[in-house]
Image (cartoon, rainbow, N blue to C red; front, top):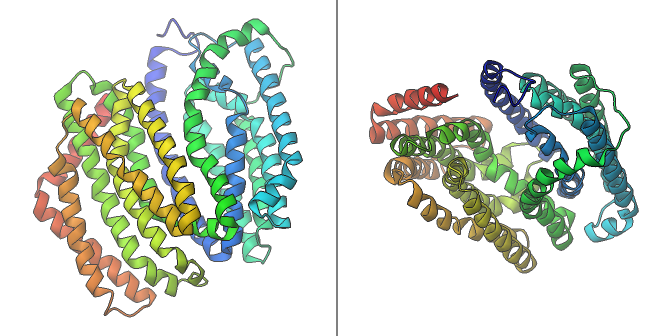
Length: 490
């Protein structure tokens, strides 16, 4: 490996891989915390219409990003031998040509999008800011590729953190001052400039205007199939948001996105950290079935241990929060949808580690087939239910799609017979007991910040006691085993 890639020695690869895991995990925690706080502010300061328009603009940008480089950046990262200047220059020219073309199409399509998505004039300006931000962000691709090839993740995460801080400071500050949705447009532009400047400071690179057909042929062999493989995810998420925006309108889409964001918040906050670390661990354990079964059971257990009670607590306390948080009563119509998305997130807490395991042991075709199934179900069910039942209908459709994940559970269990009782049933019993207590207590506790805080503290203490009784002292032992196993395999 060291000979094949003359850029790095084997020892350097090992060291930077470990540092990369630490840096990426730390970055995720920081960004999740920033995004969690900003989400709270945005949903206080923005109306349903403004929040819905923001979601539409994000989805449009997601589609543009997918088509921006046809997988060439991934091909450069994956390339076994040293990347040449001709390959970098050719990739840069192709990507920027595509980006400029897409931005031009985006501006030309503005009247159609404005009518279809019922965009206001500030919404159109926000959409344009995303186009410009997309163009500026595309200029970061080559420096980012060079950093990733050298596994310098500690440098790579710095611009991402700077971007997040800049965006949220500008957006929240201007929105607080009464700028409305235009504050997001300014924030997008500032974010793009900060990210572009910071990454070129960390990894200077001068574009070379060269086009080599021979250089690009090899990159296309990997890049195009790779990009096709990611298309399903883009179609399933961003594509659906755009379609639902046309069905529901910005206000109802805003309610739906609010419910989805908060309903899935515990899943994103807790599970994403575990998934990043367990994938390489599962990969290294794939030839040791006993250890893989143990690691999988424990990873599902710790995800469910944290996600289940967080979702249950959120579902029970959300009605109180809409009363005590200033300007939050406008989200009350989305509370039922939040509950449905919360249930979907609880199912995902089980299935996502399983599909992660299937990928880690090389069952890519299996997970690809599952993804095709979920895309078809998503596009067949959610638009139909949204048409018939509005926001709650779309959320119910999402829950029905989540229930189809039983197929993934059955398939994964055939490969690795993980401990269902330990991993899922015990956290579920503890969560049920906690939810029962909170359900009755919330009827007698005063609706205030003090009341909500006391319910949260009571829930945490009660859940901890119940889990300790169900699991016993092995809980601390298992936590140390998971950490040791993962650390040893890095």
